Length: 338
Image (cartoon, rainbow, N blue to C red):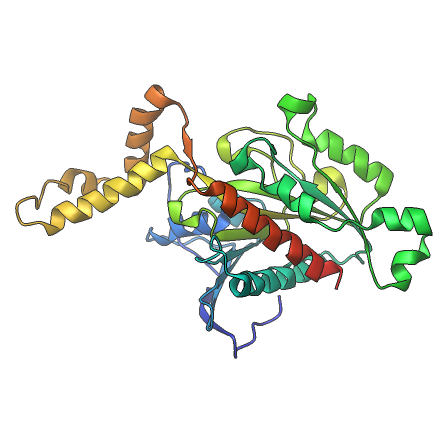
């Protein structure tokens, strides 16, 4: 990855290792949140590199987590590869200038990861994962709805049409979910790849986060592919370079968070409030004495028998997904069609 422009960005951390510790499995699709779990521990793990930058004018934060070997893979619970996270707190708001900045940075990171695949990219397959009928899960299909596909122009006007105009071939598919099609997404995509022979696949999906503050404000980009539905416990065949035979970039935005994680954050805030009060000081000491993983385990044991593995999404998720879908589709246009 090229070094960031110091006139716009300042590096706020960087190194070759992050802390490690035994932890209870918290459902999150974000490598950044896995890294934050380690940050709260005192031990160290090799095989994971971390760098962070903050954009000076907009406050947009860029985090690059690289899992370098099997030790890092085991510690993080994520595949070896690069995970880039853009944190943009105002992304859910209607601010064209702000979205333009996020879009430009996402386009740059897409270009960098595409180049890192060491393969000339002339044909791209975009895959919009998720269920268009379920708002929090509709990000992928909405991005595809905004995307300018070009492959049909080459079919209609000849193979030289796109090259003469400096364009590349982009095709797209919304494969739906297994309950609608009776087929695994990987089965559908493999069939398309065998016919269209793209050089690169970009998969767009809604993710699950550990923290409420990540919802609709964070974009994760990775070169490791994706496992549809893994964030909410639906384990499907992965869409990866190993399974599909071509490089796979995955772009995701968290739109849901587990109820147990919300309760844990609430308990933490309540403990802090109790300890600050004179009359209530000491009341939260038992919960405070528990490790974070123990707190989370206790909360899940209490919640899930009663409510099941409940997931929560913001009330304005429809507008949020709509806005972010335009940002992602425009970033793909900037990265490969301009």
